[in-house]
Amino acid sequence: MNYWEVALMSKNIFPPKTAIITFGDSRDRVYKRRYTIVVDQLEKISSSLKGKVEVTLSESIRQIEDIPRVLGMSQLQEAESVILHIPTWVLPNVVVMTANQIKRPLLVITNELRDSAGMVGMLASAGSLDQVGLFHRRLFGDGSNPKIAQGLITFCRAASAVARLKGKTYGLIGGRSLGMYSAIADPAQWQRQFGVDIEHIDQLEIVKRAEAMSEERVQKHLNWLETNVGLIEYDDKQRFTPSHLKKQVSCYLAAKELIAEKNLDFVGLKCQTELSDGYVLQCISAALINDPYDADGPKKPTPLACEADCDGALTMMIIHLLTQGQPTALMDVKLFDKNPPLFAFANCGGMATWFSANSDKPEENLANVHLRPHIYGEAGGGATQYVAAPGEVTLARLCRKNGKYWMAIFKGEAVKREREDLREVVWPWAYMFISTKINIDDFLNTFGSNHMHVAKGNLVDELVQICNLLDIEAKVY
Image (cartoon, rainbow, N blue to C red; front, side, top):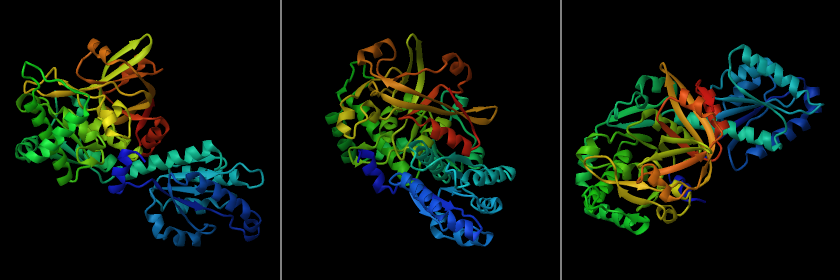
């Protein structure tokens, strides 16, 4: 069990929840003849989800009068998605009448057995769902087939992320930063389309709380950083001194306190230019809020987008839910080399330190992190510097065009580069170098932001399904 999973257990983060409703032939004689097919196929489907998805099984629905009894099951009300299992021929109108009362993401599945009549039953039922406008996904195959099993898991994870997004609260600390239209959002549109509320909070709250923070708490976190980070490089120009770091740690604790007190699920923090020029840079806050640990031990990562990037924070929250709590990041699209194709994504604090080594042990991640004098911000402070660990990653970003949301998605491979290579770009920042095969001209001509977000592993299929469920166009580069 990794470090943030320990934290998530204490925060009641559960695996995706689905219900499987099995339909049966309305004719007793035929139902009995094919009963073993029904049971066998249901067992294969439920077994494929075991340990990854929490499953509720229902009694079979064969007639219209069966529907109220099955849909009245209390466990069914907690399901975040529903799998409509059609193992044989069934009455399509019964499937439609059931589905029309569920109001949750639907997946319809059947087998490919020659003697089951499942395919004809599924096509008749799914075609009927299309006729009445009930959106659903379809799978054809045996639940024991790894490809089918992965399709089921992908659907359940995507549906769960969408379900858990509803009712979340975003804390917008500050307002628009540096004139970026791509970083602001319409609260009414978010509530209508995503079920998310936006709580506006003044940055003065950070300053007030930081100034009142107990010396004991601040010193505990300072000692923790000094013990664990690979290097703290203060400068002789008074831009990054021990007093700057102490103020940055105080701001982190203030933000952590504010998030807990107001029960915020994800946040955006403006920083520039009021805090960066008038108080202290907020890079330590951006890194540690996104991390699954601090001096107090394991904690739930809270997605935080610097520069108060609302759509960036929302993307990070979706990724966070999809991965059941993994840290996320906000990165600038900094550079692209064509030979060989390589992106350089960077940020001064918006990347959780966890990405430096992807280790379950905080000290192994922090050993790769250097705190160095920042290149901007009149108030001064340190930036977090590291080169992200190698591995498969997925990049994503919610963008808007003429007020309509769409999501940019592509996968790549984070590759190892030496720290000294950062002298060719912006020296004190954290970087993720990503090799990818996308068409860079297409990307640069259509992408709708200067910020991108990342998760470990291949999440392309899940993100596409999330977009389908949210009625958002998915553009996979």
